[in-house]
Image 1 (cartoon, helix red, strand yellow):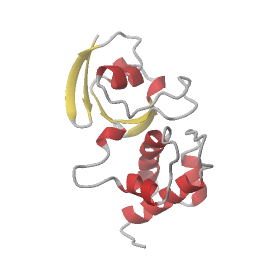
Image 2: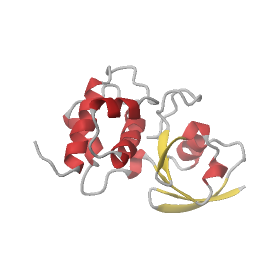
Image 3: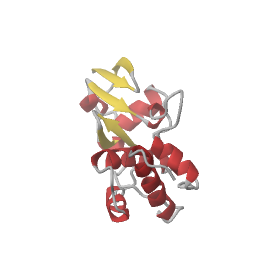
Image 4: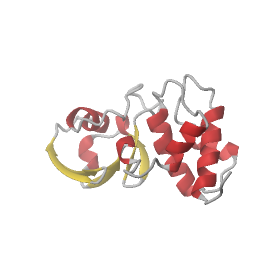
Length: 157
């Protein structure tokens, strides 16, 4: 089947098998390996991408379902000029250790902070509940989200 997608601003038309998962299309056909495969069961969130602005676990969606969609992966988050505020906050607050969950966490937190620009720590924890991190204990991830929220609201430390 042919699909038409826009990934990180680039429009593509590709032939895919109907059973190809979006995560495999992104990684194997488009070469965007920042989207990680952690569990293949939608439990970990490492494969989270934005599809038409919504955070989606790409291991639970077929590529054909993304036909005519706009997809943003972690590779499309930073600009040539700067990191996204969530990415920068992860760096400043030490929100990652091994980094495997980080792309999915960043994408998820972008949506969380877009929906709620002034979250509490509890709001952030609820927002990332579908993303697992086996290294950090989440405290620095939450601190990163809180710092990113401040930055996105125009507040400085």
